[in-house]
Length: 364
Image (cartoon, rainbow, N blue to C red; front, side):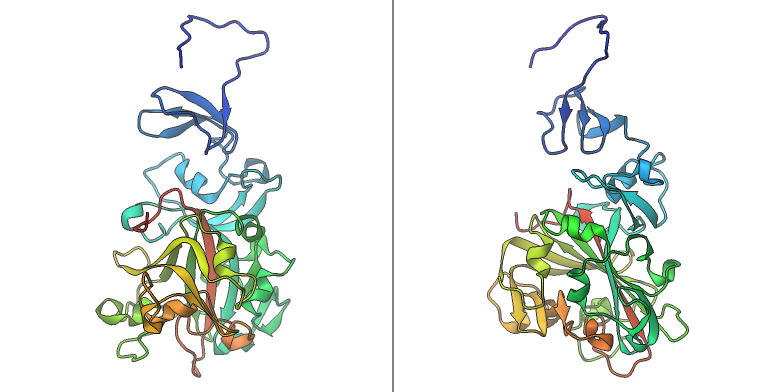
């Protein structure tokens, strides 16, 4: 590329910069400036990375007119990068779409840390309940419309109803609401979105509780409370499971039903736990094959089932996606945290997504 040397440029209508997308930026050259049509921002390559220098830098998601391309963009372009952000409702208009939606965004958890470093900025796509209290004693709004028993997991995913700005975790000021957001249907067929699965457990007073799994013998459950020495009771931490999709679509992984056909994935996916960003990550390994057991199980190949390698650790991997979710109420989410007995609890399962610009990748 040749350089244009000029003291001034005269134009009657203005100067037009090259227009690119995030995936079609030109070969890097320090000082190169372009206009990114995805982020609606001028960008400058500073010798290390592309940085926003104007245009859409005020797209902070505070209003529909200032809808951001995604929650991670809000985090990356916050004015003061020395301070953190609180979780909040934000307006999002994904690149290539024409409508902005207001959804609950998580800025406080970095998506597991690990080699990927800081990965803040997650957007809610799904929320539902399970456990004994979700079998009739709760009033669950949204998809349930005020009924006392939680909905089937796949009924929510396949519905045509959306609950964008009311799917807020109960502990963060929301109510008991289940359903999905528009973001789910916009991203599920688009490769490259990581998934964060958040668990909150509530008692009959609607307070968040911890479940002391010390000495619990059923060590296969997907929870840091019961995975060997690492998983002793951690009663000050919340559990976050991170699924690094590595350009496999969420629809390929989750399916349209618990028994959707197709067990081979296009690439390896990795799963690890982050217990509230307090320094403890537990790597569940990777797999490129699903384990589907009729209408009761959907998960990943694992060593407990003696699946061929590579496989994930622990039998809980085999039903991480869904277990007993053809049921309503108590078992709409079962053995995702504990396998229910008669506990007077309700578990809240919230799924959030983030574009995996950086990800924990051993399989490349």
